[in-house]
Image 1 (cartoon, rainbow, N blue to C red):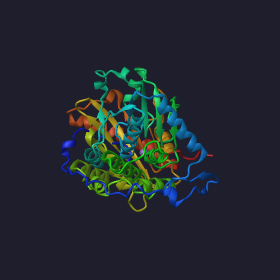
Image 2: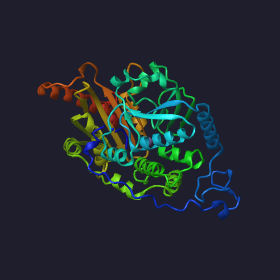
Image 3: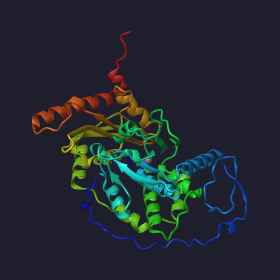
Image 4: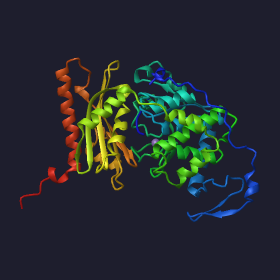
Length: 432
Ligand SMILES: [Mn+2]
């Protein structure tokens, strides 16, 4: 779900080419089926239905305005080159939405490079990128020094607001203006961008991008392999951010219904069939062993893990939250990258408790850094955090020292979480 990404794609054994799409005939004239009917919907507004698919979402005037503003933005930037920045560990929702943005922008002769700075670590994400040929580049902060950022007339944030990307600061420093932000996480910082579409109540960014497609910004064509693969990735993104559609709302189902005309079910199946690596299984095992349950919260520290296995953390949290009498799971560990001398405490939260807001919970638990930026945040039922280790950072061969370092961080994270989980225990009632 949340974070994920690496070029270790060679670990993938599957190299199937999907069959050519056998979708519905694109010659069906829906306007003939539904002649210019004025359809009122539950939202209380009336929309013109001529020429739309019968199950097409009726758009509110606000949505229409957004789409118009977006169209104008694309028009203004005709011929530009833009960089689309994903979170350091991009998930299927981010990957597929960015690809869709790129294809839409292409129609306006805007050339986009989709980049991320971290790792593709979830097996499904690696499979998705490999099997669909999703155009993606990894830019490390170091490699940025060799890039000419002045080529880019704007940067674009999709499924994130820059707070989860190491590239954000470099873009700011290079003076690349923020052209577009499309996201469904709660508003993070006060962002200044030319076009912003942030919908915290929408379950998936893929739903937003699918609505753009439905509005006619780009007509998907069953005969184009790239379109079929992109629709398949959107279906995957949408499913993955809605817990296989179990948390989907009407707009997500409508988006999925639209995508069902174009996606390749066999290809999606191949992506979903990808299996977990041994390392991921080991992290899940550690999370099971180390978990402690307080007030229906399951909390597990998993110690050190390699940067490439970072996505094992949300997967372990997904698993822990399935235990009886547990409504919320938090799993965290120290992620290290030996080559880049990087160490960071990474954690994931999953909850089934409707009254628990992961964004609020994480912000409250860990607070802000010296610059006033939160260590994490979330969306419905899921959240994540990353805490830099500062002076204590740096991988060491000395195992006693490493153990000591882990226990300090483990205790600190636990203490912060338990303050919220067991408030009474931590704030004893006054003597009077
Ligand atoms: Mn998302």
